[in-house]
Length: 209
Image (tube, rainbow, N blue to C red):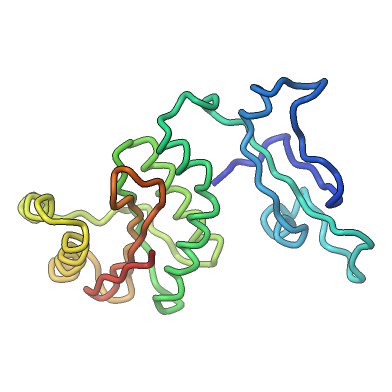
């Protein structure tokens, strides 16, 4: 989840976004991550900062531009990590939406991310947990684990088979019980920058994307 810092502005549609100019250079401008939201959505996420849409609406199109300073400057990360993190909010929002549509209302969710770079994997998992909480879901901070023998077998299988088998083992070994679901996020091909996800529920694996 992008952390809201002192960079939140409300603009009419015709107003330019914060960019390079007299205040900051092009290099400095590139080191901010920005996301544009409707005023209604921005108020829902940040009620203490963004006001509600007036009951009678507004005369112009008003939205919120939310910008946060990047921890690492542009170009300091590998290209794949950069691409994943740059669109993390949008990707995780869609994946958590799809996930919640697959399970009953009072499901307890467990989340983990399988990504080559541990720091990026952690950010992905945290973003997914937050996304589920924002959708009113009950989320555990525990990660479901299998035994060493299971992991050794799963490591030799292609992803399509490994996640399905892991899901069945989670249920068979009572790592997951009825009423509990596991949301896993990953990349399937090392060359891609698209997140994939699947849900393990009642011993059955389902790919979301």
